[in-house]
Image (cartoon, rainbow over all chains, first blue to last red; front, side, top):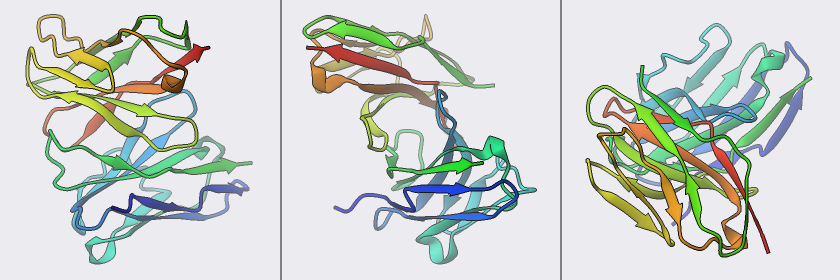
Length: 115
Length: 111
């Protein structure tokens, strides 16, 4: 079974530039998550989709971050404009249902450096 | 709000030593509890989980018991190996479709 695919693996941009990350979840998984992991911290949920609808985006900085999951499959996360404090690893995960006992499967992440 | 607190790392052990990584939580309701592991260069993967009080999750020689009275879910392994070197994350899910992670504990195992 193929895992969660993310690209790119690494990205370096200057502040105020824009960047986009892509995620392809495990086939058939209805729930998709984007997490931000700042160095030395645990992952923080940015947004959760159930199929192509948003379940939770309470911690997404909506003035600069946006995400979409068209057709309920793959997803993109965009930052525009980027700030220095956005430097982090962005993790995508998926699960079959999103319920409290359901395992989430993670991609390898995209490491973003904003200079 | 809901939160997870883990012991700070790094933890450095010699091979075959006993491992404990402490995890305590604060949550409304009755969460499910998880340990995830992140090996160097890889994504997070589920190590074990427990869904109700007194449940014991176990996998690859690791185990953790859901202690409701002390709100804890400490990770233990009787004899660590070099290949166990990784970052370990304690996490909870209260059914609000949100998994909350601790800050992670880095483990180094020396041969």
